[in-house]
Image (cartoon, rainbow, N blue to C red; front, top):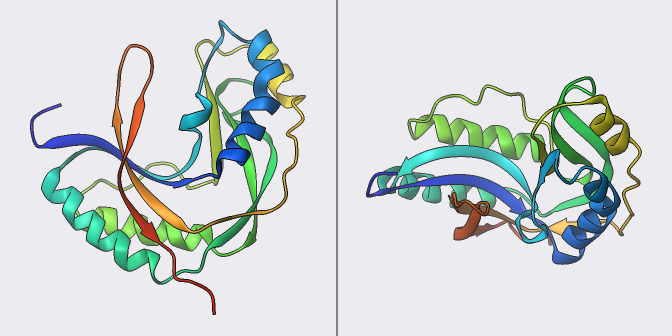
Length: 192
């Protein structure tokens, strides 16, 4: 990382009780898959809207202004935890995730708007189609055992929950895992 840049992503923070439910639901699988999967710590669980990679402070400033303008166009989102899934396939899982059901709001339109602004700020187009999910683990070596174990995880349900902001995070990679710091938050417009 050169001076004047940082590794960043745009995400939706989840309420702490939702992160805890996800972590507790994954705990039995994490015990069985301990050496096969690098698990995301509870405090780092979030919904990524756009990974940015290494960005300059100038790009950061442009994106922050864009995110401020984007957020005030949308009302808070109402979400519900979904079922476990994997990327790219159950045959060769690389990422273990928990899905989301969108009860209220248009997360896809929010993400598309963010994607357009990221490109206008000079970033490359995202290669993957957006699929709302919460990453909980990254597979070290794919195996059918991982798929079978993760497929059978029962995600405890919490009541529908509301998220009311977008967050720009700085990600610092360390041997013990990534450390996420909030750069800025952008509130959705209030209902009413």
